[in-house]
Image (cartoon, rainbow, N blue to C red; front, side, top):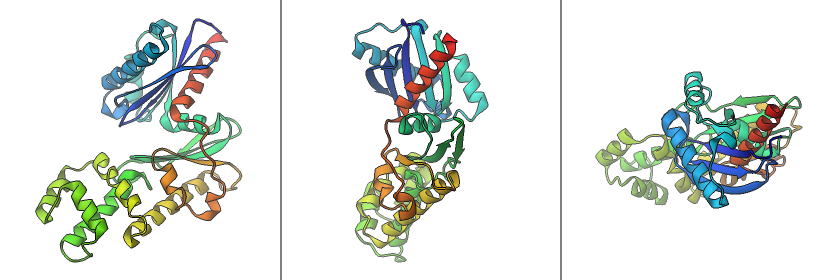
Length: 293
């Protein structure tokens, strides 16, 4: 392998980008973060965010950025859209190598170190994936807001706001959970909440999830979290019916939802070994090895 190369792992989603810079052997040199690079927000914006993160990582390592010496392994949201993926590749700088996969795949590589296993990634959205003995990746869920992404932040928030709605017209009590949800939205009556609802997107709903978790003992919140745990269990079971593989919950909601996963699946849960950006670094290393023949 060319020892002059740098390997770069990229984890790109709708809320931000994380970059891990490594040397030709994959030894980590620096990390950096930048703006969103999920392809749904635009390919040009994705490359701007990735370039900014790479520039910061190289600066932290005290090395000049030279794209011609870089092999990138990118795990990005939105690569299932073939047009977006083709445009992303077409707009790439003159890099030495470029491997692009879904962020679910790089999360899987990071969580289990490239070995067999299951992951359920839980953030603003959700997706689950498994790696089999042949290195094949199977992905389920992740159909997106509002119909899919079960157990995600947006999924929880979309359901939680119902309690606030019903509290305003007397169908539910005006309790601490309702008050916390209304305070977050800035709503004080029916009309002001309707205004918030008309403007809310999946990110806005996902920001309600921490309120649900903070009120986990409230009957409504407890029921929601229990349903989320059941959905996580269904994803794990669908990917590994024989219950033989280790499973990891990843993303910002992974740890908070762990206790709500049914015991039959919870006993198999393992802490992720590394994150999606480090999975991207493994992807870059594989690409460099492939280039070397």
